Image (cartoon, rainbow, N blue to C red; front, side, top):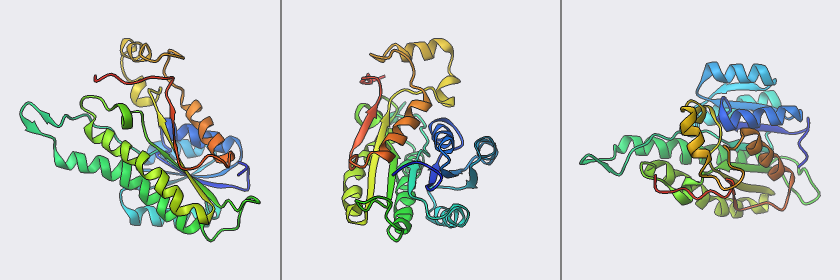
Length: 255
């Protein structure tokens, strides 16, 4: 697909970090973009700055997703591109000081990171399958999910986060196969350590230590680099059914 004013897109988690960078990247190419997020203040600010449209959405709630998609389609038409960036990452060990991991925290992480991504992908695909083809090969849409290098190199205290992101990588190929005959591609990106707001709130010495673990380039990833990969995936029709690590060749140590 060619990213231009004829394309409508949905970006979850678009109020900050990687998602906000994707929103800005798409709007720079005049893509009609709807931003889904729970943070109303930040979401409306990014929407105002970028010329996108904000919808307050809880991705873990399928009805919230369905309602927002309906409203976004009324505004921009049927989306042909979905980028799942919504996610949370609380730190907690399997057992800490003799106490088991809080099951509600684990369930919440899976509900937002995994189930939320699935809700948006599945309900969006339901609409995509009836849309006109965009290319001579019959492409109707592209779904891009956000995994993490934690899916492969989960660190101490990342059990819930790593499990949710590993599941994102695991559902990429079967989802692509499920939707292949409908002309919908599915890919995932597994970013490494990026300079998102969560990371840049750390002291500079902590940021420097994290950057030093990255073989090359020895710096934090830039959200704009993630957004550019989203754009390439959207426009390269042969990319389907796989996860791309975007990490400067880092392999995370245990802690």
